[in-house]
Every structure is written in C-alpha cells, then in structure tokens.
Length: 165
Length: 446
Image 1 (cartoon, rainbow over the protein chains, first blue to last red):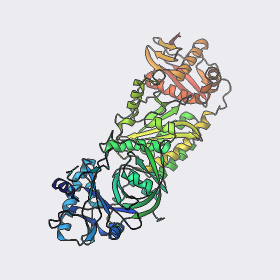
Image 2 (image 1 turned 90 degrees about the vertical axis):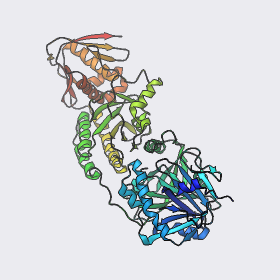
Image 3 (image 1 turned 120 degrees about the vertical axis):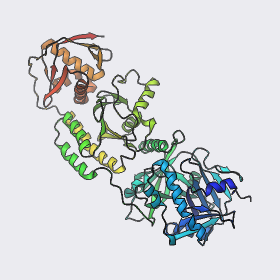
Image 4 (image 1 turned 60 degrees about the vertical axis):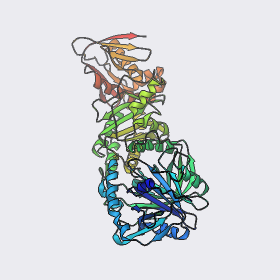
C-alpha cells in the first residue's frame, strides 16, 4: 500500500497544529486524547510519532496496546483545514530527546495560532502543559487519509498522494 | 458514573468556545475521531450533538451507539472525557431551536456562517465522566453572584401591586442585581402573533410599541418555542432588526406589523438571551437581554432568569386580572393647558393616531387613546378607570380584556417618548388621568 505521507502532507502534520487521536480497544469502544506534538523521525519516515501526556492518555494507550488501531485528526485552527489519518500498527515508543524537544515549539505555535480566536495564551499553555517525566509517544504508519475540513465533504477519503488539505 | 462530577457542573465546557473531540468506532473496530462544533447540555444525564452532515461519526453511532467525547473548560482548561450513548434524533421543537440558534453563534464566531446547517439534535445519555489529570487555571468569576441576585429580585417583585410597578421593578432588578445593561420586555399581543415592546432599558429610545413577529429572531423563536434562546457569539441571522426587515421584504405581516416605531437594540450584539415569561401554559411576555461582550451570558444566568421569569409570569397574570376597588370614576373637570391646539388625527382602518401629522401609534393602543380623547372632548373628563375602559372597549375588542393594562402602559410610555403635551398619568390603583398641556383638535377619518 502506498503511504499517504508525501512531503506536503508531512509538513502540514508537523506544523504544530491541533491534534486529537483515538483508539479502539478489544471491547469495541473508542476513546481519545489530545496530542501535544507530532514529528516524523528520519530513520522511520513512514511513521508519525505523536507526543502525549501519559496520565491523560492512559485508556487510549491501553487500547493501542490491545489492538494497534488508531485514528488521528489534525486541524489548523485558523484555516479549519483538517485531515484524519488511520492506521492499524500503532504502538508505544520510548520517548527520546527529539520527541521532547518538539513540545516547547508546539506550545508556542499553538498559542500564536489560537490568538485569532482571542484564546488567552495562559489557557493554551495550561491546556498543553505536560511535566517532563510524563510524556509518552505513540507511532503509527498512516494507511488511510480523509479530508475533515468542516462542510458536506468532511469525511471523504482522499487518494494517496494528496498533499495538505 | 462519578457522582462527584455531573454535567450540571461541566456546562461551561459545552458552550462551544473550544471545539470538543469525539471518538467513535465502526463495528469492525476501526476508530474515528473528529471535532464537533456543538455539544449542548440537555440535563444532568444527557447531552445533544449537532447533526449537520451524514458523516462517519453518524454512520458509526447508528451501528455502535457508544462514543467518547473529550471536552475542555474554556476558563480553567480542565479536561473531561465523557462516555455517551446515542438515544435519538430530534428535528424540531425547543431543544432543536436552541441548538440551531447556538450553532449560528458558533458558526459566526469560527467564520463558518453558511457552512453549518442543523439537520437534527442527536440526544445522548451520559454514561461516565472522567476528569483528566493535569494543570488547571483558577475558575473565572464573571458578573454578580446569581443566587443572591435572584433572592433580592424575588423579594422586590413580591412587593409589586400593579402591572406597571412590576414592569419597572423587574427592569431595575435586572439592572441593579444582575448588572444587565441592555434589556427589553415584550408583551404578547391579543392574537398571540406579535410581541410589542412595553419597556426597555439601556437604549437611546425606549422603542415602546415596536413589534416583533412571533417566530422571528431570538425573541420570536423563544416565544414560539416557549424556551430560552441563548447565543454567546455574534449571530447576524438572529439579530431581530435584520430578521424583521427580511420578513417585511417577504411581504408576510407587512400590513399588520408596527413598522413605524424603530426597534431599539444593539446593532451587532455579541451575546443575546431571550427568556419566555409564562404563567402556567400561557405565554405572557418575553425578556430579552443583550451585550456587546462575547460569552457574557452563561447557563447559570439563563437558569436564574428562567426562575425569575416564572415569578414574573404569574405576577403579570394576577395583576392584569385585578379589577381593583375602583367604583365609578368621578367626572372631574379637565385641566387643559394653553397654547396652540394639538391636532390629533385618527384613522379607523388601523386605529393609527397622528399628532400634528407625526405618527404616534396604531392598533389597540391607538384605539384606547382615541377613545380617551373623544370622551374628554365630549364630557370634559380627564380621570378614567381601567375598569370602565375594559367594560367599554371590551364590547368592541373582546380579546383586549386581559391585555388592557399592558396596552395602557405601552401607550403611556409611547406618549412619554413622543409628545410632551399629552400624557397618561397613574392616579391610583386602576385609575389614571389624561393630562393635556395644550388644547386638542380631533379629526377622525375612516
């Protein structure tokens, strides 16, 4: 299967935009958490690495360990451009320095983006805060891509090779 | 469910300030995650989601009705994960209309006007609430404490012995105890099709007598559905000025609606709340408040005003039907001022009244004024009682009986707005005086 992760899409996903991801456990129920950053490691260019607060993500991490099924939605707040990616090989990774290093820039950029909506910066920084020892990283290979920008076309499957929404 | 947290204490998360995320799963176990533009509080055990498009989330919940929502308090950043189960979809009625109005505000706030169109309100039962660990900000304190404000207002309203006293006290309670600067009180007309402004505060002109059709704008929809409508972001399609202009352009009600008296009100309100005032099942009036501040009116204020309006509704009903201990009005000689005569013209077709060629009012209030001026011209009387007016006009306008007091209040306020030479002054319980600062010449036509 062709990976939908072309350079334009990869740039969009790692441009410090809003992230939520969900997983379905063996009980068939989906649960979700907010992501705190996304990067693509040079040594594994087909996988997305999602940073998250481990205490907040606990049921999601458990579901990922059970089934590996994941869906992640990425939204650029000021433009509403949104995509959802799905994969079946999600797994927990050990957190490395490069993962932790994206958190600061991620919070700074999200604070800047949400100023459009008059969202106070302390609120954004509180929402996205995570103690250094509490990060977790989930990685997966995106297999399916869906346009999710609000409107009647939201949810349409996008062909592999589609760039940023 | 965690009984320490209920949806009652999490309503702030449901205002649409920050979009929530929702996760669903297809029967084969594939998760789906997306943002929801609106999650609405229904009661402590239920929430509603807006259904705008048939999408994967909807397909999933129809097959596997359990979903998880991640939401955030827009003041404290506290996060909650709630597990919900789909029950049904409502496509009309009070909840649907509340959601539709709120969605218009959210659409406008997020630059999505024209994209969002509500097809239904999906009702879910809340199965579990989980507070997520993490940093939080202290809760924000906005506006006065609501329960003491409600208590003080209830105490003040209990002392009212007349409808106009009730209307004034209600307005001053909202101003003083609830710090609400822009407010209107609209009574329902005799046919139940229109609302007319009987009092307002916070505007350059009172707008007494201006009308709004039931079903139009925030106020009209609140009246039709008998449910509060609250919007906390600017929503142009619900601004009543625009809604009524469009209605008139379409030709509906154009002949009947009072269009000469301009509506007061903020040109582009950022927060709006209309609360129907009911006495049992009967719609008496609508309270409308607005602000140029976003997110000014919360769920708790809505609750407090619904409670207060319940008392106002029964008080209105009781005070309107009070005939008082009046007896026959004395035929006191009229004290008429000096100066050039004021020309009063009346057109029987629509009971419109003009003072020196300037439009004053039409309809029932116009008929009342004409009746008083004729009586004064014929007998010299200036003292009247509500009761005699009710008996007399009641023969011609039977539907007026219940509304006479409110119409008199409207007329007296409209006169105060427009004419310094002609006044209606209250002289006692159920009694009033027609005060003329200039002689009048009456010209009846049609």
